[in-house]
Image 1 (cartoon, rainbow, N blue to C red):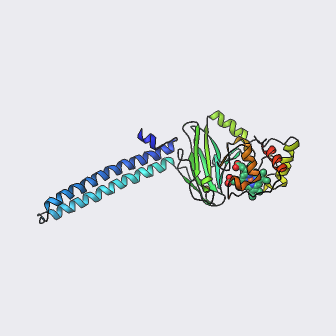
Image 2: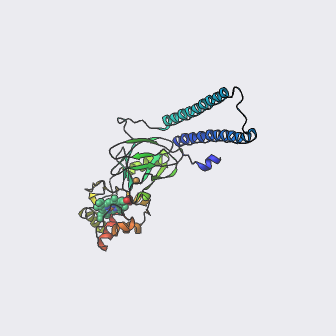
Image 3: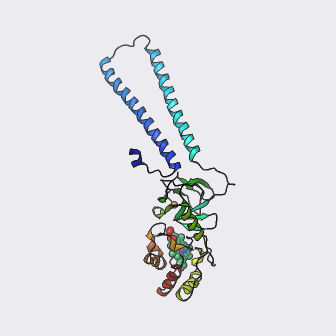
Length: 311
Ligand SMILES: [Cu+2]
């Protein structure tokens, strides 16, 4: 149970990693105890033995001890090596470019995009079905990031121009915190995401919903906001499925209201936070890659009204 307090493993993959760590810790503790014990013994014995001359046969004895130490060390390291290779074989996803992944995750400064096979796109909030492993391809749109959900999977670097693969799986439905774990610039610390493991039925519903195009704008402020979204060039960076907005440098906003956080976890998704992203994005998340569009209050209201329909 003490291990349970230390390691919150929630997937078969992290159980293997924690198991390896446990084995290494126990073995290291045994080695430490033996070495420390022998050092202690020889300290005491050395003091009483003083400067006794070498007894006959002591050179051969020393050689035997040396051989024993060398062999023992080699065996211990060999066991650790084999245990590590076994753990890697158990948890690593195949590096097969022909196998199509269930999910493609792309790191951006400073948010994560997740793209599913059926066309659904989301950012910084990744849903998976509990109890089933998904093959995830990880890459980057700019600099090197690192995709890490400590409870669920090993780390994987997101390297521009190079694909990495991991299994993503959770034993039980729940929410699992993830983060970027490779320094990637000013807002590295705010590059969070959450993996939400749903029951199979909930996951299918969510996935189906997320692959639908955005609600068509009705009238009044909402329609005005939709027009502004295009005329203010928001669509150069953001996509809204079913509209002319097809940018890829910012989070997909098709179902922005269905997400809990904005700015990769920096603020809860609330009407106030929304308004701040529109009026002063650099105040919402200093240094982020969204320029201030210098919108008037009326424009902010219209855009917020429009984005507020993107459930
Ligand atoms: Cu990063």
